[in-house]
Structures are given as C-alpha cells and as structure tokens.
Image 1 (spheres, rainbow, N blue to C red):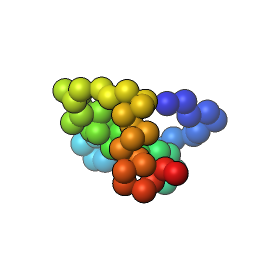
Image 2 (cartoon, rainbow, N blue to C red; image 1 turned 180 degrees about the vertical axis):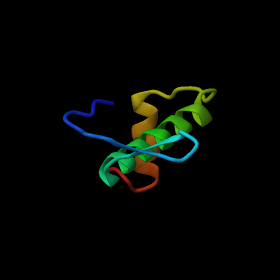
Image 3 (cartoon, helix red, strand yellow; image 1 turned 135 degrees about the vertical axis):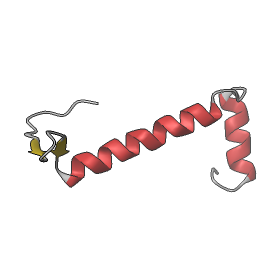
Image 4 (tube, helix red, strand yellow; image 1 turned 180 degrees about the horizontal axis):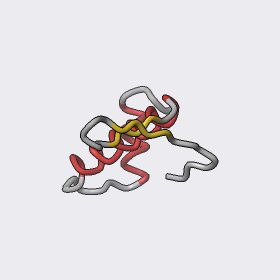
Length: 65
C-alpha cells in the first residue's frame, strides 16, 4: 500500500506512549486492506476453480448473461 505525501501526527501521553493520528481516509483504506487479508487467510485452503467454472456459476446465479 503506497501512501504519498501524508503527514501523520503523534500524541505522546504522560508515560511517553505515542499514539498516531492520521486522516480518516487513510484509516478506511487500512481497514479495507485488513479485511482483504482476512478473506485471503480464510480462503487459503480452498481449491481454485477455472475461468470456465466461474462463468458457469455466475450464469447459474443470474449474475452473468
């Protein structure tokens, strides 16, 4: 994931612990990436299907003409 020209800010508490502050759009993109990685991890052991099989399934469910 490439983030360009993003200036992040830090808040430091009394104990010296840093918390990063960044734009909500960047947070949303990170959450999408985390979700995508979770889906990949869940489906890691699934057997791949062919393009032909995928087309057949999409047609069967009315998602492809």
